[in-house]
Image (cartoon, rainbow, N blue to C red; front, side, top):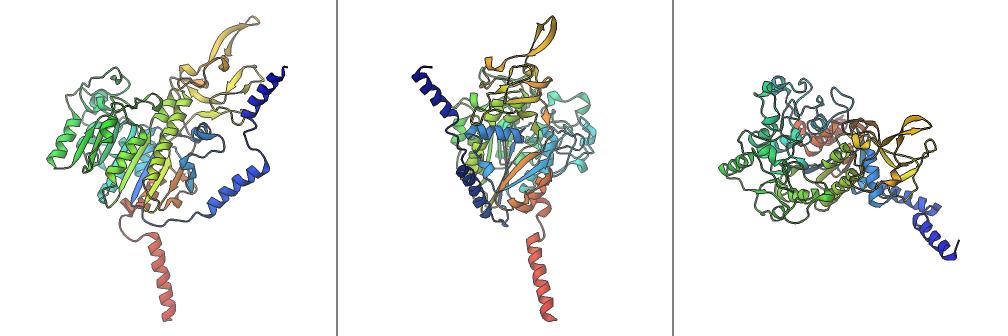
Amino acid sequence: MHSWSVVVFLSIFCITTCSLQTDQKYWKSLAEKELEEALQVKFNLRTAKNVILFVGDGMGPNTITAARIYRGGESHRLAFEKFPHVGLLKTYSADKMVPDSACSATALFSGIKANLGTLGVDATVPENNCEMSLNKEAWVDSLAAYALKAGKSSGLVTTMRVTHATPAPLYAHSASRSWECEANMPANAKQCKDIARQLIEDWPGRDLHVVLGGGRQVLVSNSTGTPDDPISAWSCYRQDGRDLIDVYKRDKEERNLKYQIVSNTGELQNIKDDIDYLFGIFANEHLQYEFERNKNPEGQPSISEMTKAAIKVLSKNTKGYFLMVEGGKIDMAHHRGRAKTAVDETVAMERAVRAAVDITSDEDTLVIVTSDHTHTLTINGYPERGSSVFGIARESPFDHINYTTLSYGTGGPGSFQYDIKTVDNETKAVRREPSKEDTESFFYEQIAAIPLDENSHGGGDVAVYAKGPHSHLFHSVHEQHYVFQAIAYAAKIGPYSKGYTTEVNIILLTFALLFFKLIK
């Protein structure tokens, strides 16, 4: 080998290995820093004036790990991974081992586990049963509703349709997540109101101070699309003649409320200072993925931009606010089997978390980051430390074909990466060689063990990260609906809006015991 070739080889080798610290001093320093952080943790027993709940839809632990590596390497920590309190949530629904977003969001926001596909109702309502969903005793109130009852402001931000499965349980009660507009409702469900109408016409939807996301074709009858924002056949398309955005506008004007309706990034960045209600619909369907988003003023805003605008409006209320922010496109990318896009959407939501933390205070704002369910994403052995998480892990000693670091348990047709070949006069399904494909592409679909119409949800536990008042309540393995209880307690809303807090009761009991001891 020529001397210059040796130099080039060693240079490349050092780029991938020498830069990675592995000596004893490095590992000790890493752990000592974590210990120092842990020793500084103190319980914040103040009441949470404000609550911001981030939901990374489909953001399971493996998605977070992949996002961490993608963002800064194996030793990196995402913004919310630096939060002082962490727990796990069990995600099963009332009737299924593995949930969907509608029933899991109902558990998170209302403290009651529901059946798959239903939202804002308890488990007495079977999926698609309109008649049973009309029983108001089966309805469950959300954190957004309880915040409004306490005089606080409430709002939602989502990269999905504002009527989709995760945001809808904040304001709607439905036997089917699919009933977003009247066109998707069967004949035997005509007496039930679609989710979009519940958002605009009913309480608490009509009184939400911030609503930001997609879904114009669900809200406005016979909406027209553009080449950049076409009508989608995947979601409901309203055809009953209603313009619910106009209904929203007339409602606010009749009540003399200060509001603003926006439809692109430029308008969102220039909202008026004196408004109390902000309504932004930026797409006919879901918002675009972050990597393909038009970042010009006429384009769609990022989840960070929407989050900052929401906090600006909500923070005007001296009594505080509740805000739910959903990174919904994480889930959409996983359903398509596109791991890099899902991970990139996770990083986009992390930026929104950072933005929220930067403009709020730990003194009075409880910030929580969690997920509604996992996906079947796996991280395979044994790629080199420092290599791309979207690259090749190694060659299989069984079939001598490379495999990628990331793969799925289930996936759509694109994940069935096998070719039918004749080998030794025998017809076999042979894995395609991933090193011959662009595994770094946002459109690359990782291989899956079981081909379905699309990637399914997973049933594993999800992590919950918290900082701010009463964030220490997240400390163990919890039921998913415990999140509602912990937030309600921290903010003193809903079931904890009256009476003394536990801390106050302990103090009073202590004084009482001391008093009786003295008089003895």
